[in-house]
Image (cartoon, rainbow, N blue to C red; front, side, top):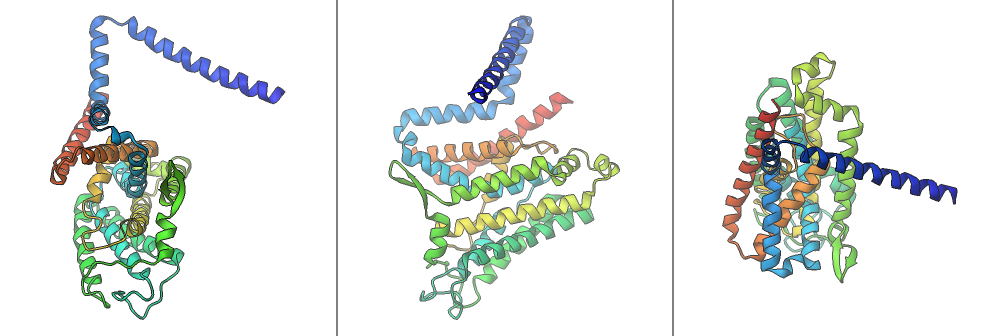
Length: 371
């Protein structure tokens, strides 16, 4: 009983402090002159313009098409968010370093192809490697993570060693990886065809039902993304590497003077990103069930948009895992909503570009105001 009372008192104290802080902010706002109030409101609207626009759009879509807020739609949004979250978590690190990684989508495609080719059913007539038995799922997962890590190592090495801009480096590796995908799909018994006929052990492991809500299955990869997000949160916030990453992103020269191994930090950020791409490719293979050379195309644009919406700044040294999760979720909400409204798929490219442009403009404005 005493422990319960202590918990209640602690919780009551927390809420009292929260309410007290809110009242102080409200009273402080009320005491401001009219011009300052208008400026505060204007600053709030401009700094949160992206969120306001997206939330407004979601409300309008829900009114026009009530099915948008059905259980089937909600679970679909959660599933899509979970599938796209690892790649965004990877690119987020590159953006913290004031860079980016436009090879991410192709890295997802390559790892998806490799994973699918090794996990086709043993007796499948169009099996890419007919003399190779279906490999254990965990071995293939480690293999695609290793491939992603190698891609990240190459990106990170050229960025850190030769001080090349990440855009140039990853543009080059994007083309190299795409060529590798096309060549890979030509080998064995495949002849450039789409990879399908995936083994049930792979499909069940990734896309099998985790649990059901209103009779609708939530796939297992949602749990995988939750675990990955938790691990990335610990890496970003509770490790020396995470602190070094933010230090290098904020000011590389100052970090170097402070004793941070800048070369090692940059390389590890890109290696970690590559591992995230490998996991994304592994998930996508089972989620889609049919892998082709175009798998992963433009995934990096969605991930970059999600990171910027979530507050990961291209100025460097700023970003939160929670922000990336929110960014990916908001982006999937708006895309699913637009599909409910039967918006032309080609129009989505225009919308994605506009979101990235607006989000970057808002981000840069915040930076200039701080200066």
